[in-house]
Structures are given as structure tokens and as C-alpha cells.
Length: 639
Image (tube, rainbow, N blue to C red; front, side, top):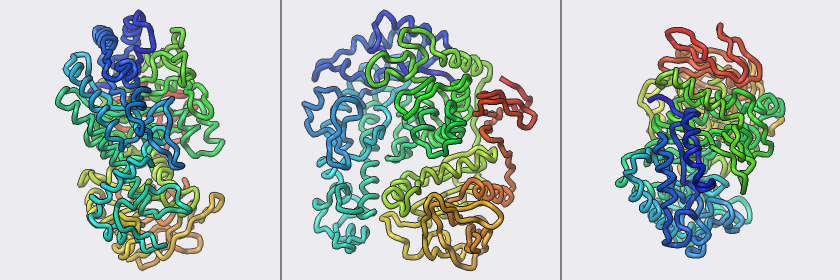
């Protein structure tokens, strides 16, 4: 389909007399989609059972008649105050045992069945009222699962639900004790009802217990989302979606996505650079007003996989945000760049947050496309320019990349439970691999460990994949010419034990892991010929070929045929060497990119995306500062 633009709008925030003018200005800006309703429960139902949908009826009609397609959100991320009085124990409880109080949003526990019934009730009411409304073109369920550390709750209701979950998983308490190794420190249980959530322990809880609780908590999010899906499916024929977040790994997005039609996410590049990325001061200064050159693309590709090819940006930053430690304004051109970059990665819709900046409450300093007094903000003109570009570009068709990364949420939970060394992070490891592929000018796909194509990739990387069984190993081998595991891949079983037969896959290399060491941030282990490993080192032995060696001659990369194992967390120089070696092995063409310039291929176009504040000349193309050059594959063309 042809990419389109959207915007997030809050009719309940503005006098009704403004709605028609807002809708007309949206159309004039080139916007065709508008999201509403996701935070408006108190206006829909100010007291229990007292339904007020007349204002929403009129808002949908005004927007729809103007020519806008409406995404209607279920308002379950913001239960009104009366809900807490009706359900006194619905609040989530944090790791310190404190309830998360009313006064902002996401104040509910995913395990509270009474609240889930309230959510399905309001979804049912909305579905019956609007499910066949011709102006409603999609539904958003809830809003930003996991935001503000709200996935994991330690409430008494979560504990009770955990008991049932464990019994379904293990069957008997003896099986659980065996799987978790509870003979250690006399942690054995006599019944499932004795097992508490793994918080407030004297010292580190059993990592198997923690990992199980993280899996349980993720499954509660999946069940919560599915409850509303099951209500809405019979009442509407339009797509159902949810808006995920950046660097939010507390639940399995692939499993939530199985019940939805489209994955969307909320892209705030400058906020993420300041708030959610480890980078040195020079990097953060260079890209202070642009965002990291790979962070947005990483999530575009990840959520394209979560949505099985269908994905949007539901919230695109159009100006300074309000929530990061520091909130500079985007450089001129960046709003357009972020929008076109999303399109390059397959976004069907790029939707800006928000239409008009709110003059009140928590987000009053968050810029929109209009200022609070209704004047155009800088992002408005760039949105209009993006619409013009899209109108002249035609359809953007995605193709399967030649390289892929296997991404596994449970691996993050495992290494968070027991990192075995400060500074190790599953996200950082995977992101470093993704950066290396992007520096080499490659387009990248993401794969779920439970579902991916059986063939067609030249290279699949699976760094830090905590658990690797023989079935997954075989599927990986069949799906690509070369699979690169490590570091830390296959290090534990499903129940957080060291595999008795050794690391899966390494037997094919006649290789064993003799010991593991973790290094402080200021210590790197050099590799002969250039580059170094950091954070985590697997000490390998065996007769399998050494492709790279550390300076002490210990193996840094072992490989034979279609399987390689990387024994450390590479720095940039080592990653670049490894990617170059894989390219030579499988006949993959690389396109080494200058700092801040990135390349994305589609069926008919090559996008050159310049995150730098200055123009860049590459391969005969001049890409303007904070600009995008779109090269048609039949003829070069600048837009």
C-alpha cells in the first residue's frame, strides 16, 4: 500500500467548536489518519455505568466527514478514579512492595480479573457502538504496555495467578524443585502456594525463579491484550493494533502481536538518545538534535517482524519532548527524515504525536504540530513536505533482507536476572550487532525464535541467545548459509541451568566453553589483527578451527562450515571485522557507510539517510544535512 501520514488528537482537550477547523487543517497538511480516545475513559464513563458517548459520536463524525480515517483507542491505560474505589486491590505493586498510586496512568495490575472484566466491558460497549462505523478504520488496544515499569507486578493477585501458572507449567512441585535446583540453599517447596514473587529476598533470588516470574508476567500482558481482542473481533472488520515502545523488553511483543493485525510503535529519537541509550558524550553531542542513526531503524525492523510485515509509527516526535533528562529541538529536516526513514523500512502510516501541544498537565511541554495557542509549530511544515514527497513516490515495497538477527525477549529477562557482570545487557549486545550491519550498508530483518522463514538468508546472527535447543539450532542452520552464535548463546536451559551436555551447537565445532569471565568497562581483551572484546568472554577449547584469536592466543571466533561461534562481546572494530568475514564467506556485497549515513533497500528504491548536521557525498550522491535521498533503482532521483 502507499504510505500515509497520521496524527494523534484529543478532542476531549479542546472546545467542540475547534474540531472542524482542526480536521480541515489536518487534511491540508496531508494527514489522512487520526488516533483518538485512548485516554478518555473518564469522559466516556464519568461514574460507573453512566455512559457519555455523544461527544465521541460527534468527534468521529466531524473527523470522518472531513476525510480522515479514525483509529479508535480503548481507554484501558487510564482507568478513572472511581475504578479504584470499585476495585480497591487493582493497583500494581512495585518490587519494594509499594502500590502504584492513582494520579498519572497505567495504574493497574495485569493479574486483576475484576479490572480485566471492566476493560472487556468498555471494549464491548465501544465495539457495539462503533465497530461498523464507516469512519473507524482501525482500533488501538490500550496504550504502551510496559511504560513506566508496569509489566511486572508483585501484588497478592499476581502471586496467586503465578501459583496457577507454575502448576500449569510444571505439573508437580517436585518437578519444579528439580527444574529450579531448589536443593541449593534449602529453597525446596512443598506446594505451589508457598512460592512468592521473587522480590524483597535477603540477597539474590534464584534466577530460575526470577526468569519464571518474568515469563509469567509477559504471559499476563498477552492474556490482557487477547481479552480485548476477543471482544472486538466479532464486532469489527478493521485491523486491531497496539502501540509498543522503544527499548521496552519486559514482555514478549511477538506473542502479543500474534493476536493483532498491525504492530505500531512510538518513535522519539531525541528523547531516546538522552534517556535510553548508552553512548559517550561525543556521540550524544554530535547527534543531540537528530537522535541516534540506528535506534529508530532498529525498532522499525523489529516491529515489522512483530507485525508479520505490517507496521506503523503511531507516535512520531515532531519537536522537543518533555520526559527525557534534556529535551532539545530537532534540527531542521529531522522530522521529515524520521518520517521517510520509517517509510523506507515499510511503515504503512507515520503518525505524529500530537496535533496541538497541550497547555496543561504532565505533557504540557511536549511539542505538537501546532502550539498551544494554535500557531504552526516547526514540525507542521515538515509534515506537509513529507506528504508531498510521499505523494510523488508511489508504493514502497519491502523485500526480504539477506541478513537477519534473531531477537529473543526471554534472553533479556534471563541476562537481567543474572547478568554475571555489571554493564552486560542483551539489548546492547544485539544493538551493537545491528549497528555493525548498518555500518556495512546492509538492510536487516529481525526473526522470532518461534517463527521465521525456513530458508533464504545468507547470514543470521544470534548473539546472546540464552536458550538454544536442538530444534532451533537445526531451523537456524536450514534458514541461512551461515549462522553466527555468541557470545553467551545457549548458555542456559529453559529453567536457567547450565546445559549438562554443553552449549548446543558447539559440539558441531568440536568446541567447549571451559569458563566464563566478565570484564569491567575500562578493560578490553584485544584480538590479534584488530578489535577487542568487552563485558563478557567465553573461554573456548577444542579442535574446531580458530578464525580469530585473542592476543593471548585463546579463541575469539571459532567456525566451520555454516556455523560460527563468537567468544566475546565485540567492540565496533571487531564487529566490523566479523561482518566483513561473514560477507566473504557467503558472497555478500557490503557498502561501507560514512558516520551518520545509513542505507535502506526496498524493491524499487534505495534510501540514503543522513543523520549528520552537514551534507555528505557518497557513491556519487550528495545527501543534504539531515536529509534523505531516494534513488530509484531504474534511475537516480533526488527528492
